[in-house]
Amino acid sequence: MRSARACAALAGLVGAAALAGCASLAPPVPAPHPGVPKTFPPPPVAASPAGSAGSAVGAAAGVAANARGTTPSAGGAVTPLAWREFFVNPVLQKLIEEALANNRDLRVSVLNVERARAQYRIQRAQRLPTISAVAAESRMGGGSSAPLAPDTYTVGVGLSDFEIDLFGRVRELSRAALEQYFALDATQRAARLALVGEVAKAWLALGADRELLDVSRETLKSQQESYDLTRRQHDLGAVSGLDVAQAQTTVASARADVARFTGQVAADHDALVLLVGQPIEGQRLPDSLVSAMALAPLPSPLSSDVLLRRPDVIAAEYALRSANADISAARAAFFPSITLTTSAGTISSELSGLFHGGSGFWSFSPQINLPIFDPGRLQGNLDVARANEKIALAQYEKAIQSGFREVADGLALAQTLAEQQRAQQTLVDAAARAHALSQERYRAGRDSYLVLLDAQRTLYAAQQALIGTRLAAETNHVALYTALGGEWSERSP
Image 1 (cartoon, rainbow, N blue to C red):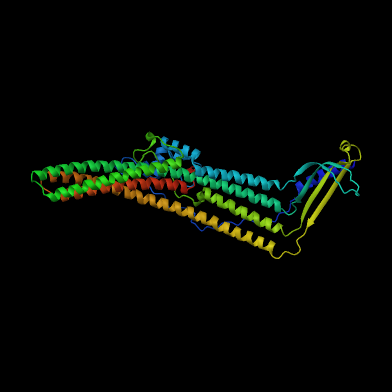
Image 2 (image 1 turned 90 degrees about the vertical axis):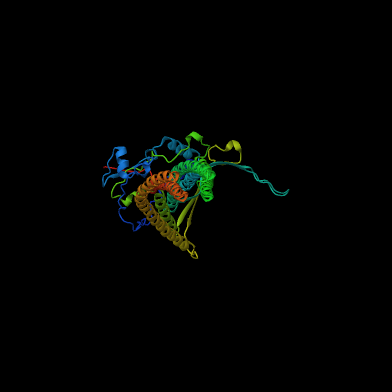
């Protein structure tokens, strides 16, 4: 009977402990005031330059909207847009898939989330008692004049040092661990988004450098032909040795560019392989800048609330909530705590008598801990928690401000690059015509080789600058997608 009453009392204590902790000392989570405008500058509307080999990424919102058959509408609701809908090139999509599966940095980030989840489970377990079953034998011996104590056998169940969470300290520590887990999960999503953007940028850089390599090879071939022609004319006495020397310098310069871009292409390939995490077949590498990428339509005006979808902003918010929970736990440490140690079972001097009547026992040892004199430790912990919350709030606001600047810079740069791309394309077309006319006039003897050389250099530099501008425009579109947090678009309500 005593054993039964003890077990009932133990069950009652467990139930009461599970219902304890109703009191809350949690302060309100402070609201951020980042001080950014409610809307971004209007998105630019620019088309790809005429005569361009096609840089759909350089097209702006109107072009992208027509391609998708949608019309941006002001005040529309923001809904997810998967990266597959943004990076529409199938080869690039496959590389991104492989990077998400094989990249080691992302794998470490995922494992950090798994570790945080396990740590939360450990902290959460502190809110419930741990009940253990114990079977023990005790035997005592003595000297020749001391009597031997009888053997004692014990079987029972009990809990040890379980804190009844009257003021929510354990609960708030569990909440802090949960918020930290959510923050790391958001950080992992930020790493995933960054990896998607880095793969796209590396792929574009490789395509641009391979296009620059092709241009330099074509220039080398053209200038080699010009050099051979000049040398033959020199042998006939039609031109001076200075013309031959000048032609030879252009050939040497072009040959050096071929070697430089060859090395750059190899470095770009290695960088892409590192991001993807495995070798990449040659047929899957871009030959030039691709034309199949486009940015989703941008609403006008674009609300800065979209920044709250950024994974880094979400992580900062969870970090703020975790710091807020730490304040609650630090406050609760000022109040009394109750710790229970209890057990119930049977005891006998014989192993066969453990389960006979009258062998039951129980013990109940509550302990109340009331802080009386603490030389500033508890107050110091509370001050640290409050300072950590202020730091987390400032970091939260800074994350929003940084995101606003990245998006605003991307929108402004898109307009600048669109205009620069059109001007650069016009320059290439004009330089090509001037180079063709200079060749005809030089061969007809109307101009010196210096005029032809200047036309060649102008065309070559203009071609390189155009490729660089296209790369900058497409890279900026990728950066703008990631700055907006990825997985976004604008649709009518």
